[in-house]
Length: 86
Image (cartoon, rainbow, N blue to C red; front, side, top):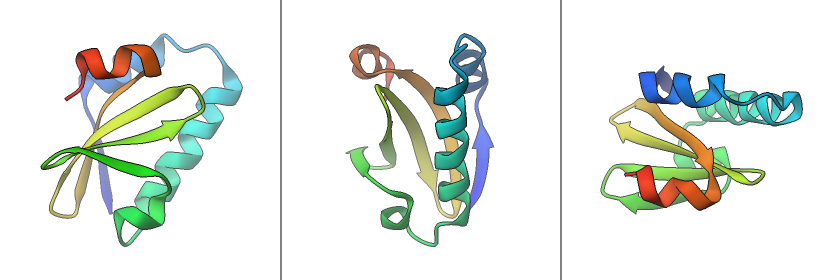
């Protein structure tokens, strides 16, 4: 699958200084890129018709699926995720 990044996502990861968390995020993004279906990418939960979330430790990766393109939209702590996404 093709992966794109939103400006909000890039701003969210700028504020994270934990190298282990960033490494796990990178692994999850690689899994999304290599997945043929969303179920191959791990524990993906559908939130809205084209909005999904993925667990990364205590953080959630919010993304939109449009055809074969995944747009990574937010990467927030689990307590803030549902306030700002979708």
